[in-house]
Amino acid sequence: MNIHVLPRTIYLTRHGESTGNVQQCIGGNAPLSEAGKVYAEALAEYIDNENISDLIVWTSQRQQTIETAAKIDAPKEQWKALNGIHAGTFEGLTYQEAAERYPEEFAARDRSKYYYRYPGGESYHDLIARLEPVIMELERAENLLVVCHQAVARCILAYFLDKD
Image 1 (cartoon, rainbow, N blue to C red):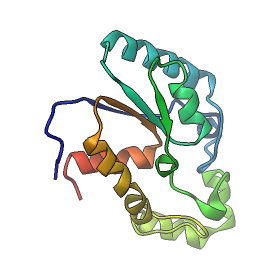
Image 2 (cartoon, rainbow, N blue to C red):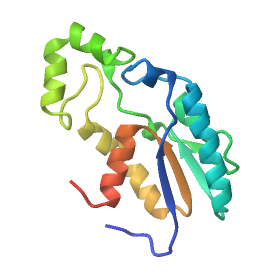
Image 3 (tube, one colour):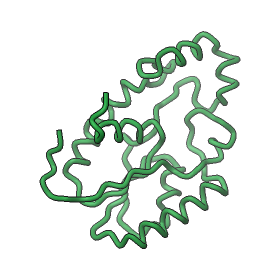
Image 4 (tube, one colour):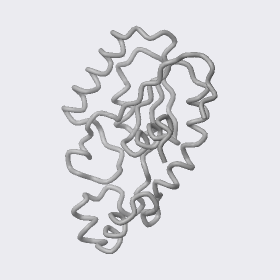
């Protein structure tokens, strides 16, 4: 269902690589790595060259999305709903640490990523419910850049591609 009647452009990007990504950590609120900073610079240059009128930038409340969008010359809004999946007790662990400390949980996650809920955290199913109000606002928005996390980008992209 698309309820927007006027043409507009929605850009969707994952944040630049974070130090947590380099360390293969699950979740987290980490600063950008050097490669992430290069990506943020390139993104800002690209957006500037596109000369998009009335662009608004949405980020999550996590450091890596805020830093990725920092040099873009446009109004910015932080959305808690755009934060990545909350990984509960896995938050901040590396994938290897999670597999070693919680082998049964880690195996359950691999069997059903959509319905698997991290202990004390969320599932993709929960994330989709959290994103519903964001998607309604996306439908009403004008030109927009959304800087978010991988799982969030997957869900938003699936909505716009009408995928289950």
